[in-house]
Length: 417
Image (cartoon, rainbow, N blue to C red; front, side, top):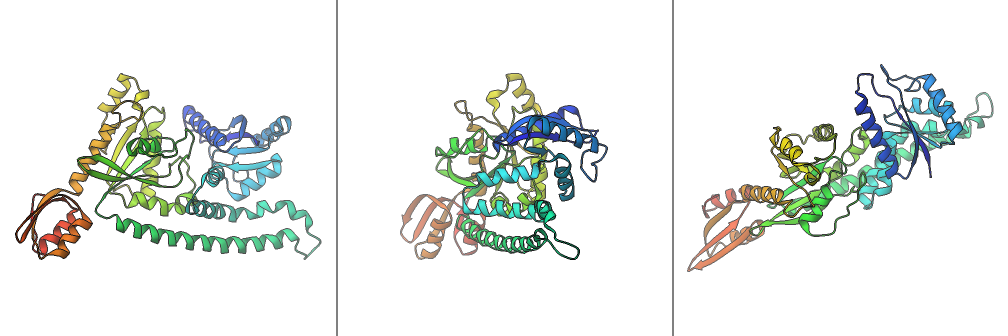
């Protein structure tokens, strides 16, 4: 098992409790990756040191700690430049990883489907490419004389070509998957689609499992879910919603990872409703809320209809929950939990009301000769009642607004909606 030292180098303006929270989260990431944490170091900076990110004195202090405690890894809470990582490894004498690389490593071990594995590999290669020089630095001693290139440099050039080729291939594979997803979504048009989004470990998978009554992997660790999982949810009166659990977000999420997971996150982009799930019992839920909002903005999803779903209310006192309910937010909000009987009823009621708005309950009258339109109604909507009266067919159905518009233009009488 790796034995690690954590390093935080926040700006001096950052409150001490925020710094502590960030390091605690880094420790949870380390635990998720199977790394033993020995200790943590903090150095407050006016600005990062261009050579080491931290100061030279702190780098020497780390070198001494590594030697005395046989540490095998140093984990930085901030992303290091390739040069900073290379310089630190030379001084300290052990492997350096930053938060971004650690998150990528966790994703790599947790990817299950071919799509998730391709997305993670693409992010890793894009992260690794500018750092190949550092990875081959141990071969620099193989140079054989003036004007002669050592095997490390030759191998470096070869590796860059191989990495570029693999990146291009992975992008092609993911574009193909994205097209397949688009086709699948087209086949589900007419059904209300909602996506659970939120900070990692907010309880999204638990909500999906409880509401669907099906097995969905749940674990009290960061990034338990990477692949989107969609289930049909019965929300009452014969109405169904397609509910999708998406990958959790986290502060300082690597840019390459967000970019490579765009195909997966398109499930959220195509959703009629985003359910921004928040762990209401977490002491830093407000910061987590803002992190998710920032990522949603990066994905151009901030304008998507959104409801704040404050989860884990069973862990709050009555006064804490009441204070939360009395706050006002830009988005509508509901309060749920997966433990207490009826704890998810507010969410079920919300989804039922959303179905009624997206697929209104209407009555239709059409001629028995309009077989094509009748087939279209059955295909696009949900027929609740049917009565045949001579040459007329009377239906009660739930249909998307777009379908209703087409039917009206082709002579079908529509009442309600």
